[in-house]
Length: 101
Length: 148
Ligand SMILES: Nc1ncnc2c1ncn2[C@@H]1O[C@H](COP(=O)(O)OP(=O)(O)O)[C@@H](O)[C@H]1O
Ligand SMILES: [Mg+2]
Image (cartoon, each protein chain N blue to C red):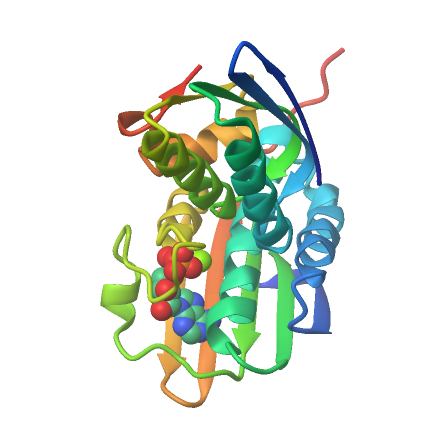
């Protein structure tokens, strides 16, 4: 699991590649938290395009990122969701809480 | 229900979270002989990942323990998986299977059983407090005709 990010005009783009499971989620949550605290974005794009696998641990990661952005009075949008990850997010009904593009 | 088994594997490993990827990968390799689509394979990997993660996180919250996966190929292209642990068990299985129910923290979503149930054709959970849990799942792989 690899995480990269870039910022432009307080828009943060976080790009994930690899497999997002419980093993990867622990460190990833911390990295995303730190990244948001340092950059104080008003909008975050979470780009899942490089994920080759995601299980329900990813749901917790997305929900936490969403709550962090709300705490900053900002927004979170999840983009480029691969098919397998999208089946997981849809089964959880996550579209009701988070913008999935 | 026909249960004649034509092939099987058994995997035993310690409940290190680093083994999650190994477990779903190994099962996917075994399932490949049923000629699944990528989507079917993704469903199987996801279900295995959920069951194994539960054993790692919930069955053995403060120690390492043994996890055993059995994968069997049954008649009519059916894959049967069982994931077993000897951990703390589940007091109320019906409640645990409800969407959003979780005894884990902010790290968990409570959607593991819901995903296993909807990605597989059948899910049974047998558990005894203090003794352990066995999750058994079945999924029929659609037979595919060779395309000319
Ligand atoms: N192997 C297990 N051993 C003990 N408890 C378990 C096991 N699997 C599941 N559980 C219990 O069932 C609950 C629901 O599991 P699940 O739907 O996967 O959600 P989550 O793992 O996100 O909590 C868990 O929070 C836990 O209390
Ligand atoms: Mg779970």
